[in-house]
Amino acid sequence: MATLTGLDAKFLQVEEADPNANFAVGALAVMDGPLLDHDALLEALAARFDTDRRFKQVVRRYPFNLARPRAVVVDEDIAEQVHHIAVPRPGDDQALFGLVSDVMSWRLHHDDPLWECWVVEGVSENRWAILLKTHSSIADEAEAMRMLTRLCDSDEADPQTRRDGKHSTRALNPLRWIGGMWRSTTALTAATARAVAETVDLTRVHERPAECPLAGRVTSLRRYAAVELNLEDVTKVCNAFEVTAKDIALAAMSGSYRGLLMHHGRQAHCNSLRALVPTSAHSLAAVALPVDESDPVQRLRKAHSRLTRADEPSGAGATHPSMSPTGMGSHALPWPSPRGVVSLTPIECDPRRRLRFIGRDIVRLLPIPAIGMGTRAGLAMVSYAGKLVVGVTSDDEAQPEVAELAHSVEQTVARLSAISTSARRSNKKTMLYLLPGEPAPSRPRTRRHKPATNSSSGR
Image (cartoon, rainbow, N blue to C red; front, side, top):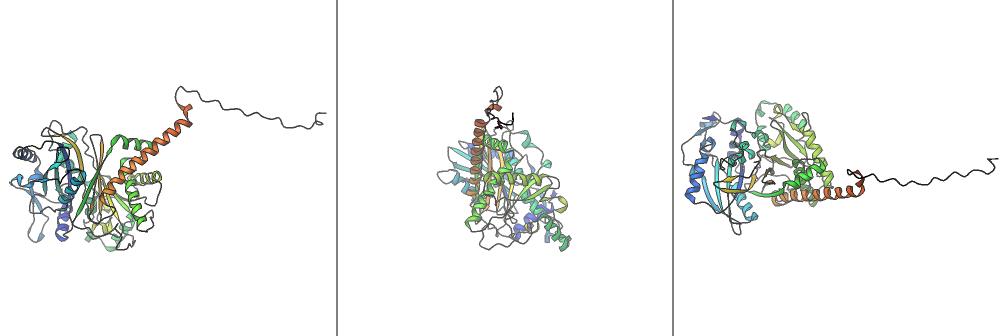
């Protein structure tokens, strides 16, 4: 029996208080077909679920909430947590993402194990999928992905994904940092809370019209989309501009939100929107999105500069443990914030080689981030099989639409890749003499004219 942390208990309490709150996260694995026999698949899943005690736990509460809930191991039939569902025809990405949106909109029942496994049939190209859905109180996006990859065939799974749960990096999840600000908030005076909030610069009053889609209360419905980028293209852009994949994602979000602000006739300021980005296992940065920059390269450079400053020990926007109770101000609360905020979670459990599940090749791994606590959109990234996969979850009423957010990342990489290629070609034309073995061209000499002299001067 293990007692839930105060943060984990708060996730459950918020869901009980707000019917629209839903802190489910997930991971999706798409396999080459055909689908296994039902009994054989169920037997294989049950055997693998048995290796992780979290699949056997349920939450039990004390009467009148006199103490924090506890997670107890029960002898329940794990098969009851495994469900079968079919993707509507034609089973393409649009249909698959629509199904994921529906499944992630359904809340997990607190009296049951806080996870579900969905076997998805009818995926195009004779494929099928497994969707592992867990609650943020037991796993975040990164840990959900690890839990899924631990179900893979043991001889193929990456050792990095089989680490003991005590080494979890759940602190990397912005959602947990937002929720973590609940700790001891009531013990702090209002003056202290205001001072900390002003330090992080998140709760400064910045009124927005109610109809502005960037801020607002989260509904009960979710939308999901994902985009897969060629890892070589992403690496090329990173090397060309000396940035990271996190910088590219931040710049892509900025471009998409900039377009939305302009569409609504609102001026895009440098401080209009912020993104919650983990900078380490112990800090979170609220980074201002460069929505004021129209040039894609300069937007990328600004994103890189701001993330670099945030990564520094005393970087601007970094939230430290001592500041965690109220450092995020109103974003710790389930009501909408006055400033639009999105979250970005890089998942650091990237399998180094292709995985298999019961002899079937896993061709795709898709992360499914959670939203809530003032964030209306969340992005998570994972690399697998030569692809950088970006999964996006948003509220049903949030704008831009989730597909547009995902597509903006793809467009940004393509545009920056084209710019870097064009720049290299231009440099080759003008600087060929810098190549090894090539002599530097001689500079043409201009004839110097003797200054005219007075004929009488020489006399």
